[in-house]
Length: 213
Image (cartoon, rainbow, N blue to C red; front, side):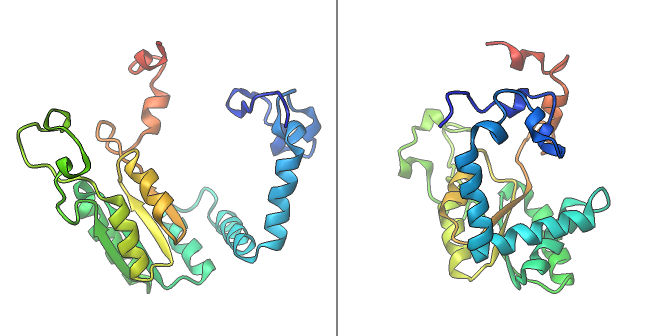
């Protein structure tokens, strides 16, 4: 493995988007991570599930580029993969959005199952949280339950699970536990109305504090 750190976020050339990848910076993984890249290419060629998914995603991108919304991309990708049953893992705060998404997916011919993050109504104390650590100390607060969400959707036979607003960390737990492939439709950000990229665009002024140690 190369001693050079993976730092694509600092690259200003993006040579990998051209037919001259050798023009990239010294830390470019196209130059420094040949072994990993070759292993990945081998999987695309030999693993049928990975190959099918990669081709489906590329075909959706080709059809939708700068024309469709992410909802439409999700529908097209699911059709390209031949999925019939879709699962929605929803935050309780976005049940209204999940209800609309369900209507859309059902209108497109999919069988939809959905499960809310608070399913089970398990008190946070049950997993070891102190009352003082809750968002509202002194009140009943159930845990967000992404592990149960993943298991229930797996039991229902969902072929693709769609995340709608799960919290940071809870989304990680769901993705780790889900047997079916997972895609994110909405990323939770209570302050920016679920548009976390807004913070990145605002670091020159409104969110400048985030760049301080």
